[in-house]
Image (cartoon, rainbow, N blue to C red; front, side, top):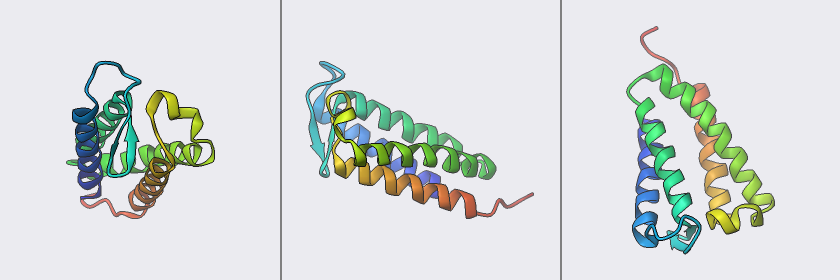
Length: 121
């Protein structure tokens, strides 16, 4: 359930952002969606991330592993954005709010993936 919700959220967020910014260039323009700024490249990354998480959802062990692994990477990405938002600002158009989202979603999914039981073993 966590994988479906998290993956669906990122697919929707990326799709809305991509619809607003278009595909004229991958690194410009930037557009804000729910207070989170995006470039077309960031929107495509979010769509791919969401689809990757969604594909793991039907299989409990795979979902758990994906939530732990991808969640940890998301948390690290979010922490880098919080510490130094200018690193990805030009290419991805991200801001500190995006850093908070990725840190919280990554840490939360890592913990939930780690503690969730795998039924049917």
